[in-house]
Length: 169
Ligand code: UDP
Ligand code: MG
Image (cartoon, rainbow, N blue to C red; front, side, top):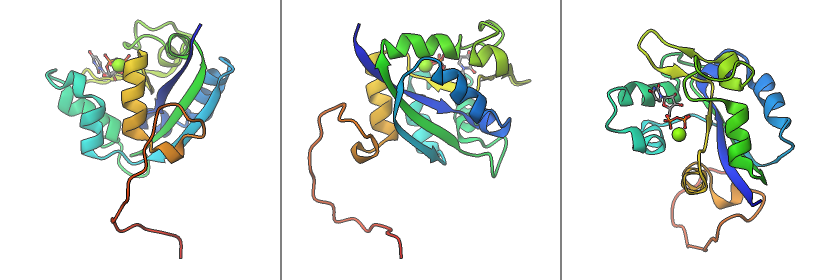
């Protein structure tokens, strides 16, 4: 079996419901390693890029607002982004996360235990989990810079940056 990596997001509903610890505990049962982790305030651009495969769905605008945490506002308008690596990681983590629709998800999966469907019909399913290796690569490259991942997983190149950068005083 192949060593894979994938992106997992603890979505704003997971943050607001104080589920971060419970979700990490359930994920840790798979005995995989974390190779990247950070808190992200999701811009509209990032939200739309992340869910671009759903851009023609009637719920796209609400979905983009959901991942940005707009419905909750500060201080819940953020996600915890994680990159896990392990054997057969994608299928195994998808099983722990559960089916997309929280009502259909296995009740002991993360989405089955903690998800809900909003009155507007959005599946607030607490976590995002990449669904195949190509999607995982696209998502990891979208959410993380190479230096934020502690293992070398994809080829990199050096480029000269002229941009202004914020550093510690
Ligand atoms: N989603 C929704 N209604 C749907 C399908 C998807 O609200 O009918 C939301 C849900 O939050 C889901 C996300 O859109 O997690 C991305 O959908 P996808 O089909 O990629 O499911 P996932 O890979 O997250 O299981
Ligand atoms: Mg998906």
